[in-house]
Length: 187
Length: 60
Image 1: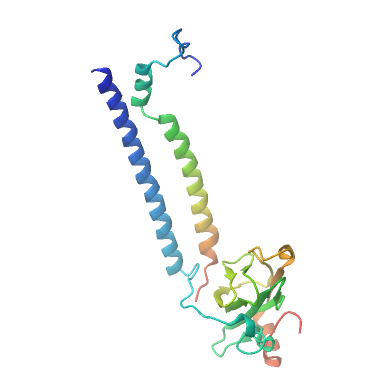
Image 2: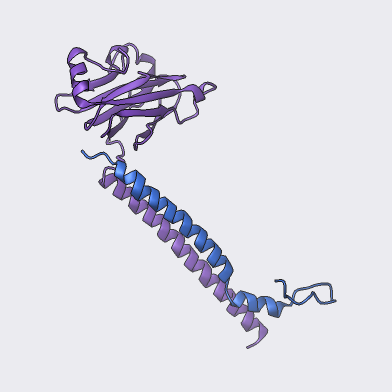
């Protein structure tokens, strides 16, 4: 073999290794995409079915996010819908009250800038974009408190923007729901 | 490598024959290192996915 042939052989080896590494990388990306599809089917996380809008300049005047409608509402089918607003630098309500063993649908939006919302110990993790309603579902099996910080930098007071989700026994929740239309931790 | 021959006196140019031989042998060390690093990342990702993320799924 001439030295040129030996050199070309080395080049072929390098090209073959690169092709194999590229194939492996693409296979990993495809596998991750397949897992994301599995997550949707398994309900580990569900992309929002449709885009819903809410005028941020009129949130406090009309529509589902007026102050008297915020908090947890018991639905006729037994599930609970929680409505909340994020604004610089707090959530309203600051503490969400939800029952155990119940499908909870969180509907939230922002009144000013882009905020985020993540509930510790659950797959709830979304952005709150002014003009749009973020909808997520969760189920809490045990009573307890879950931290709910803003996870999207929203200004100088961002680090102080913390909320909480308080999970209470379903019977206790139903008793409170019989007395009030909308529930939060503090009435 | 520690046991490589010292550079020749003609200005330290590498021996192209030796370089070709190294390239022909394939980047086994690089594959082992990159493969192990990739494997660790993918396994940690899978572990979080299967043992943390999916069990938190909302059962409708």
